[in-house]
Length: 326
Ligand code: ACO
Image 1 (spheres, protein in one colour):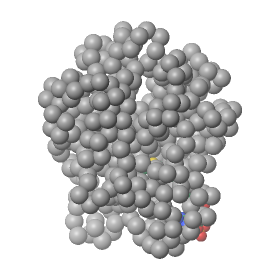
Image 2: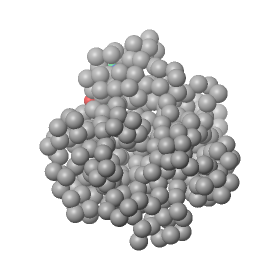
Image 3: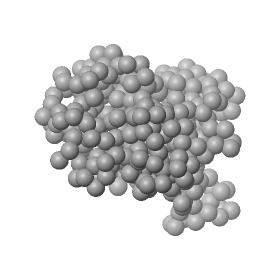
């Protein structure tokens, strides 16, 4: 089986910034509460004319450029998102057209904040087995479109963005060493968007009842997150034949600084071995891990042979982790 790794990276966040003090004018909250509970200072918000595929496009163009590839060389496009442009066609198909990636198969993957790692695992196996030679994987979300800006419990937590990677064959010994994916569907009601699907189709009532916005039981999701960040990290290290001492860079889902810190404590990781950008972008769901990874690449924080551990959790409930040798 071929070794598969990352051969190009790119990211995009919309220009508009929504700060904690902006939110103070919208709901009964304050900067001190938001920073101490979450670590978030600001988040980027898509312009009215931007949809998820537009954010994905900007990140994808950069990833292709950094891989030195043209769009027509791409075999497969997977967009991880919970905020697709439309139910169908998929955001991946819309993006395929925008890019002119006419030789690529394209589909969306729905695993909320774990979607990027789920997509990496999916595409890696297509390439390992020789069905495809490369894939463009994008985590992109416009959570602002499904956020209730009158609900202080959720509106302070989310932002918009996109992160993209091109994956393909890499020299033996490098690339993805292991994945650990999981789901706990019984926890689905703790974090969901109930309206507009086949269970509860859109109607004047679903709008009135705010069924088209994110619902979250913050405390329960927090407990789940701390638990699976620990267990998934241990599982994926074991599968890779590595220990926590081998980690050169930890790239966790950026939902809450306290969840990240509890994972860092469990791994005995010093701050320089962890990427944290939740302060600038808040929780961008599927975009969160690739935004952090791409920022690490831009800051030259990874060198050849480094062991990178990515781990995330999210709606489903789901989790996903992987070990990557850079
Ligand atoms: N400003 C001021 N006060 C607030 C705010 C706010 N923005 N939001 C909530 N409060 C209040 C609450 O109303 C509550 O008041 P009460 O006790 O009078 O009811 C009080 O603050 C404390 O609330 P807690 O729930 O105890 O706060 P907690 O310390 O748990 O922090 C938080 C809340 C930040 C939401 C936390 O639970 C959390 O981060 N949970 C995980 C969230 C997460 O990771 N979600 C992932 C989503 S992934 C995806 O798929 C999109």
